Image (cartoon, rainbow, N blue to C red; front, side):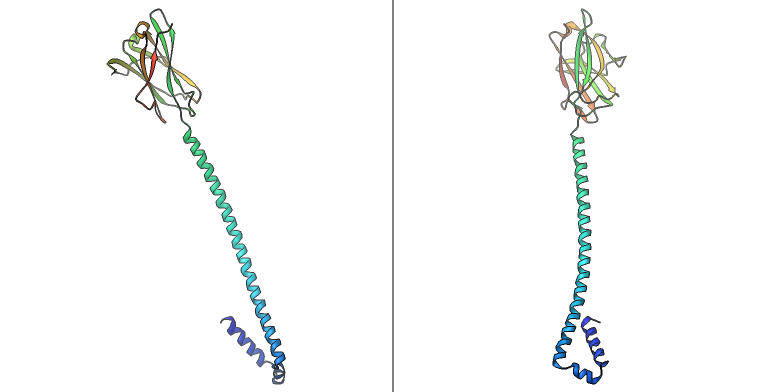
Amino acid sequence: MDFGEWSGKAVEAARSAIPAEVREWLTEPGWIAVWVSVFTLFVVIIQIRIMRRQTRLMTRQDSTTKHQTGLMAKQLEIAERQAGIIEKQLALCPAPRIRLDTSKESARLTRVRVTVDNREGTKGLKDFEWSVWFPKSVIDGGAMVIEGRLIGMVSMTTIDDIDYIQFSSIHANPIFPTLESFVGEAKTVSEELKPFRKVYWRVVCNDGKFPESERGMIELRPAE
C-alpha cells in the first residue's frame, strides 16, 4: 500500500468516527482549510523524517568513502616507498676490475700481485670468478700462487698471434664497495716485460661480466 492510499483510508476512517452533526460543523469551509493545513503539516513532517534518515545514511556513506579513500592513499604511499627501495637496490652494482702491482723479486724476476678492486662499486660481490691471461713467455714456472696454493694454468689461447696462458679461480669471500682483495701472485721474467706486455683480465659474478667487452687489458712493466 502506498502513502496516498494509506492516507486516504486514514482520513475516511477518521470521518466515519465523527458524529454527523460534528462532521457537518467540521466540513464548513473554514474548517476544511484548517484540516488541509493540518494534513499538509503531517505530510511535511513525514517528509522531513525521511529526509533526515537519508541524510544520516549519506553521512555514513560519505564517512565510509573518506575512510576508504584514506586507506587507499596510505596503500599508495607504501607502494611508492617500496618501488623507490627496489629502484635503489636495482641501481646498486659492483664495479670490479683487476689491478696488478709489481715489486722486484730479484735481478731476474718481477713479483706481480693480483688484486680485485671494487672501490668504485656501490654493491658488494661474492662467489665470483676472476681470470687473468699472461703471455706464456712471461710467467716463471708456468704457475701462480692462489690463496696459498700453487696453481697451474687453466687453458692456453692465442691473442694477437701471441700465446697466452689463463689462470682462474672462484673467490668466495665478499668484497664490499670501496674495498679490494688480494687474490693471487705470480713471478714473471723481468726481461720479457720490456718495454711492456699486455695482460688481460675478466671478472664474472651474479651481476654480470666485467668488463662488458670480452676482456680488460693492463699494460704490465717490470718493477724498477
